[in-house]
Amino acid sequence: MGFTCLAVRRTSNLLLFLLNKRDGHCSRISSCNFFLTRHPFYSTATTSSESDDHTVDSSSSLSSSPTISYLNKKCGLSAKSALSVSKKFELKFPEKSDSVLQVLRNHGFTNKHITDLIIKYPYILSYQVEKNLKPKLEFFLSEGYTHPQIVDLVLSNSFVLLRISLERKIIPSITFMKTVLPSNTAVIRFLKLTSHVSIPLWKTNIESLRSVGGPESIIRYMFTLWPTCMSRNPKCFAKGVAKTLDLGFKPSRVLLFVRALGMLLSIKPSTWERKMMLYRSLGLSNEEALLLFKNSPQCFGLSDKLIKKKMDFLIQKLRISPSRVVSYPDFLRSSLEKKMIPRYAVLSVLVANGLIKTAYLYNFKISVANFSVRFVDRFKDEVPEVVEAYKGNLNFEGAFQTSNFLSIAKMSVSEKMLVFSISMLVVVLPTVVTQQPPSIAPSSAPNCMNIIASNMGDCFDYVSRNSSFESPSESCCGGLATVVKNEFQCLCQFLQDSDYRLSINTSRVLHLPSICDVNATLSQCQNAPDGPVNSSTPSKSTTVGIRLLLVVFTVLFLLCFRF
View 1 (tube, helix red, strand yellow):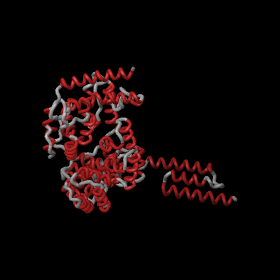
View 2 (view 1 turned 90 degrees about the vertical axis):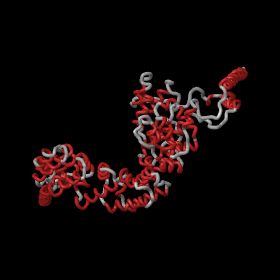
View 3 (view 1 turned 30 degrees about the horizontal axis):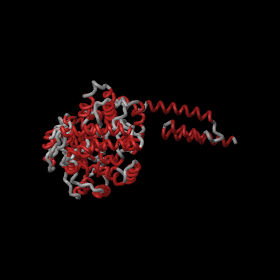
View 4 (view 1 turned 90 degrees about the horizontal axis):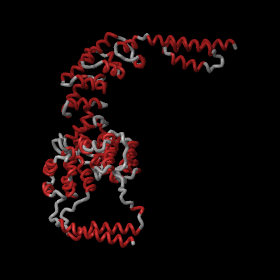
């Protein structure tokens, strides 16, 4: 028995000695200690003491490590960060590291930049300054890149500048990028986000884009908007292009095609199916979900949680049916907390106080400056609550709620028939009696504003007062053509609305058809101040007389009905 105990102890001591000599870390010794304490003949008191001694020795050795000391004192790392970095990097030549730090500081790196870089990529401290690091920095400067741009690139993607060859990779890649991208800023942005530097790969993917027959701007936009996608495997890239075409996207509509292709390349097939199922579960049909993607591919890039939250807001608060969400994809892309909810609260306050009659969906699409001028600055003295509502500090209901003036659900059948009869007499008969020609029949204001917003929402940035846009977008011109063809009277009504005249440049609206090459003349709308253009207007006295007779008839009818 005594011989067995002695053998176990000697074996344990030998194992501890070997582990300590190999790693020098108390964590490994503690693990060994944990294992050995399970042995029935092992003395826990002796091992615990020995383990504590080793822990103290190991900690003191770490605190006196030259690597940790250098990282802490020379590079500005905290003790915790220095300890973490020292586990994967060992300082061997302090003089070389001093030269690296000096070159970085000479090229615009602050102490904070250097600290962040070393935490991310500590091996830069072992670089050869004259042969590797400095020539790369000097090359970018010679190509016209600024110090801040170089710092931004190194911190965002150290692989590009630090880990690849200057002659074989960096110089050819920058030369090639200049033929594709319009500026140094665009090149830096691409290099910051790309995961692979390969000219043959880029050229193959460019040929896939050219094969669809679209304009050359597709290539530039893909490199600018979806840099990671241009570094995808050529086979995957070609499949993405084919699927984009199969879904009905046309290369002639450059931005929409690029957004669709980028989104399809960015999500897995399983993710695509999950998004389709999610939108179907929220009330959209399969065709409507596909149409939503065609109108705004970015809606498939939102998280499932965010999609549910935004759809709930649109359906419950704005009273938009699931099928109509397809017409307002911008609402899904807009921030709830920063835009949609504050605007909803402001409009609710104004409707509740009678300062505006109706809250149009268009009001959620106008620019921040226009909304602030029209609804916050304009009414903040009368209703101070709009300021708090716009800041998101006031949760107010009511802007899009059903009218409380008449609760149809609580009426008896006879009362419902009475209301219907009165409505028919007051609304329909004047039109029949006066025989107003239906040359351009006016649409209801809310419906018209929704039509304008859903089809021409992209035009508002161009036609707004003080707009900096020099020309309307392709989607704006497409929406204008649709409205002119199907709802021309809504354009007239929009131009005659006094509220909206305050925020739009009427001249730009009138010239939109000629700029977009749409066959329409909007100047005639300005000649009809009270409504859409009609070939003849009934006399005011005739209409008033008829309505007075109808009022008398209605009163008599009510009296008879009551008694």
